[in-house]
Amino acid sequence: MTHTSIRQIKFLDTTLRDGEQSPGAGMDVTEKLSIARELLRLRVDVIEAGFPASSPGDFDSVRQVAALVGDQAVVCALARAVARDIEAAAAALEGAARGRIHTGLGLSSVHLLYKLQMSREDALDSAVQAVKLARHYCDDVQFYAEDAGRTERAYLQQVLEAVIASGASTINVPDTTGALLPDQYGELISFLLHNVRGIEGVTLSAHCHNDLGLATAASLSAIAAGAGQVECTVNGIGERAGNAALEEIAVALALHGSHLGACCAIELSELTRASRLVASITGTAVSANKAVVGANAFAHSSGIHQDGVLKQRSTYEIIDPQSVGASQSSLVLSARSGRAALRHRLEQLGYVLDDGALDQLNTRFLQIADKKSLVYDEDLEALMAEYGRGIESVWSLKILQVSCGSPLIATATVVLNNADGREFITCASGAGPIDATFKAINTLVFASDDSPEKDGRILATTSSCADAALEPGRPCGRHCDLQRFAVQAITRGSDALGEVSVQLADAQGQVFSGRGADGDIIVSSAKAYLNALNRLLRAAAACA
Image (cartoon, rainbow, N blue to C red):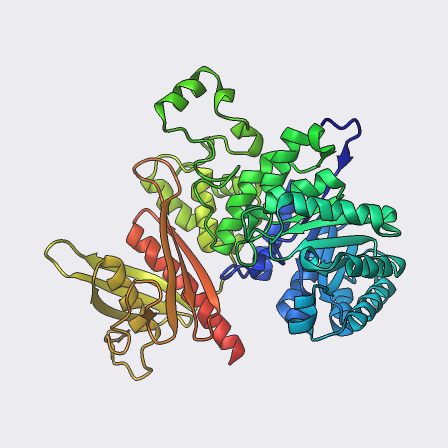
């Protein structure tokens, strides 16, 4: 069916809030601001910047994102249906040009009985009071009916009518567990649009999780049924299996807008850049076969496919790679490029650095440029993943020397600097070069304070850390557990940079991501491991 009238769908991006809830995807303020700048280039309508009541860091993130965004987009803050959350959200949004408080609670029987331990009557009253309080602070109030997909229709209708009468201007209908089939979710949206009193005066919003891999399809079904806003994240990151992916919905609207009766203002040419930035900051790698932005999204290996594409691209590509920013990067920089050129290209990629940070990055850039004849955007993004993420180093790598081979025993000699500039050195052996490197790093990071000193360097010996191994789930030192280790080439040519991403878990199960890039994959591994360890140690120090 082709629609004669086309509605413009609002995009609420929740990468900075729901996306950050993906294990290991925590972001600091600097990183959130980098993503917020990219979201502005994507032209999203609403940026959900965080949950201010959850932590001082989230409160500050919302405040700083609001200051950065100005009136270019609505800045949204999440709040449970309790007064202290709503007051925190209002305070964080105080300086926002266009602020929105997003409040609500679970309404399904399972949420009311087991999580909230609340009657339906009390939940209804809490919803109404929350919206009224939010409206006291903010004209733009969004209400979320958590687990709406499993909530009894009559009760859901009753609550939504009450919160609309209390001043909610947007109604979020989450399929929190991704339990519904696309047509079931679309039918739910249609039911609400036809039966809830006052619904014609508000925006109905779709928020779909990807537990069954149906989040994008369900969101499109909601749009076809009449939803005016869709909630999503870059790369689809988020709780469990994630959320609906912004890039997938935007491109689907571009291709099928007339059928869906909808369009959007998303800048498609920024999709690939946004994907790479979010993957870099969160440490959540994008699958090679990920739709729209995956490395293989426009790759053709079959001879039949290659022949077809060479004759006419549209035989096997429904999306022009260039339209989503996936064209091959042009030559931009070399060893002869100056700091001004480097700064200019970084700003084009969305990175704004002060002089000190640029000096630090320029030193590393020149090291790579001396080894490579050409430096591509991917190289710069890899460098920013390592240097531009605002992580203050507890430990930094100074020297790494590895001996390995068959039948040799892999041995790594590591020299680290701590935050005071002191040098620590040790040597460790392992099942392979990376295993040996990680063991040596563990020995230094977790060494006792009474280690001997020689020639200004503090020596450490393998002890309780010696059994650290590379296998996921096995103890890696005394304080962390290696959950994930992944390697990929991120630039072109035989001199390509290799990027390593790791995830470590502390004793409480909190996950910390780290990434490192270098022409030497062992060095990349050491940098990634240290990057994650620095995050873990900073978090431990903050809680001490």
